[in-house]
Length: 442
Image (tube, rainbow, N blue to C red; front, side, top):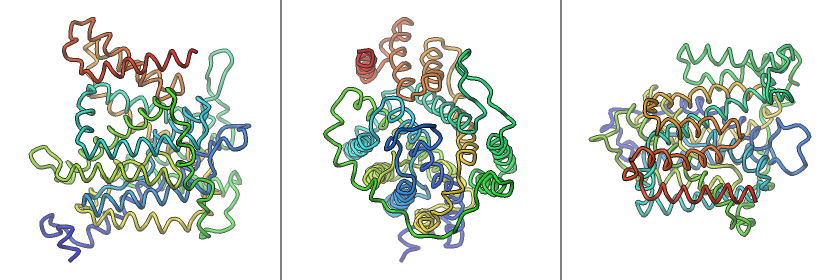
């Protein structure tokens, strides 16, 4: 019956291939179990006020549950071999831009994630989501992806101590003889070599090798246990509901729009890329696209309820497809492994900033590959794209980068005489982001 439901015969697959594919996808994604708690707890920030960062143990549990629920939805409802988990970039935006820079409490930020997920569901059910995506020019979508990549990598370099603040020139090279910095550099080297050799779970294995090396040389304490009880969700569970009244500000509107915007294109790009690799596209269209988008949106709502930033589809799923996955059964396997991972929380103690920094840097490398799709020869396109990309790391804000790019796009296109090509939605974004900067200045 299960073989028939997941269309094994039609897809030319079997239990063995799907199981191996599901395990491979989990291993390629497993780094998020340790990176997400590190990012959302803001553990790399010195002298952080108490309560500003999220509880690391609760976020670990929320991450595993959100990934399991989202991936299960994708497997059973949409029948795609695609794993979901809290998204890289979106978690950095949540922690470093919304909470750290804007000063918005993480509880209110979680409410913003919840609302963005609900809007995402409504847009998906009404079909408006696709129209909204089409309204934004492709070059700006690529620029946002590349900008987030630079931003994530910048955070990784900071956490590693490779890049530090410098009063004279803002940033400079850190002390490369420091033990933790050397450990992070070693981690980057190991991860790069693994990925160059084609090891699908290179990021995760790189973290394991770095952590073990750190313990062997005395930079990281040995864990007291490997398997333990599941950390409590009490600090984060349901908090998103209790702070819904705090989201009715222009600042939070921009935050919610950014959550929506980034998740929009992250999901769409991942679905098409992985489905294409698996040979699932028919006439260049994605079968069951609505169900896949609904699964993704539902996962964001579930993730916000348990206590984590936006949950989205992972391009690392392509590694599972490469290992043979073709159906949703592989996603069921991946989801079950995320649930099993709940019992390995003691390992959080050995996943320090030096261990997670290489993952951030390497994911950044992967994300900036979208630069190749931008037409740099057209100045009216190059300017808003470049500003979107460069402002994100320089302002330490994904939202600000998007805002600047979306303001300049209509300006350059109108100056070029191409105003008829600008979708009305883009004029709406132009007004919203102008008001956003006025509000910030005030």
